[in-house]
Image (cartoon, rainbow over all chains, first blue to last red; front, side, top):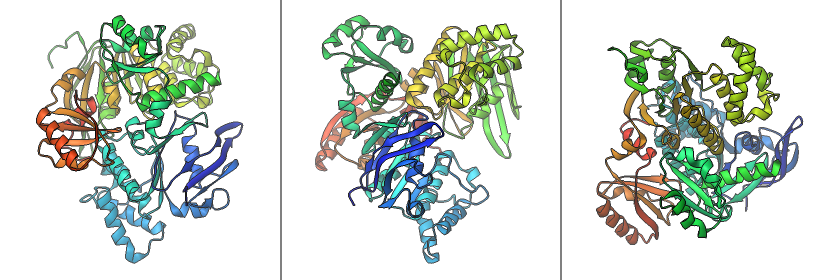
Length: 305
Length: 300
């Protein structure tokens, strides 16, 4: 099987609103496929269609060879899905939650204990088996939810903003687990607002207003999307100088990244001009994925209006 | 507590809130300057919301004291409640009426604030039809109607895309310039960099307070940024020169005891493993590096 997920003109409307508009995507086995876009751009709707939870209005697609429209029940059995608001049972312990999900996926009795133990090890939950989810930190809850989603050993895993609101340390740990799963052959589709996570995906699809507007590797996106010369500069009162800098004729864009400004100049020739203007030496950089994201979102809005 | 310093808008002393047997906020003593952008930074469940609610007087502390030196404040809760079947203008009128502001003043202030938040052109749109970023701006508009001297925001940018987050921060800066003191909580480390003062909170305890520059200066290790041709670089952590190394986007951030020694050790090790190095350079730590180091001992 060349692709584990493939869609053709996949579309979903709600009333007169088109949430997902003729999307074509292909995902290879073992790939971490990042799905990025502003809020309300159609990420969750697309993912829910791929999981067999929502019927497409038009277009077609398949997951693991099963048709989205006709075989959604089979898809649901074969995949792992962790939604934004994952549902753990608050009155069951960590251990009982895992056993419950093992039962839901009809994992044979003699296998269950072993699988639950595997998940506890994978999620770094050892010692917490008897705790109720309410007493776990955000990061632990999230890893327990992941354990519940993959206890059936699905070959493809859908994660909808899995790392919202957990600590940086937990986010790193979570993504390490995802990378390990992918290295072992699991295909992972993940939506996120964190650009450092997007950087670690093998492929990124960017969606805006229900349409797919970019689809490539992180390196290609960083090298090909933005035209001009990106520099990084450290100015006092950086936040208050954005508009002033954007009004310079050779500046195309300016945005804040932590304490630094990223400034997109129309050409390399103007770096020296810019340095003279600010009185500070700017450093040429490869645009970050966040730069690419902002640039794509702006472009899309321009085209719409 | 001694007489409150006039330059402070909020002071707390040993502020504590216990739910069941658990101290959600534990012995927090802090001072917030008038005119500050004060960031409360920490993960889910660290106690941010509980602390902010006590600062606003919405819940009673179990122990400790709090003084507020401001008559008026605006509060934007994490789950802001807008009326989906009311338009932007109707929501504003409704919240204005709750603040007992007369309708003429509401209209004038709303126009001012909508101009700043960029919603002026959408007054007749239903709140339900707004994007996440626009809803958040409308909630901010409502919180600002009473012209508060102090604005308290609980994770205002949670789950909002990077571009909308940046726009929102621009607005906060503008308000701050006009004299509004801002207290904001966030789980995003890049936003911590934008605050004038940052308090790192974990498990109800303030671990560290200061401006981002000094917090970073007090970071005890050197940071090396490494980009190399390998999917997994975890083996670097086995080097005795390395404190901790982890992915940071497509690069690797390695905290080390001594920069030059560690550089040499990493170059040797990667040569041995035949991994090509794109670059290896000494960089200043980010707030994320600081946060990870400060909360390292905590269970995650």
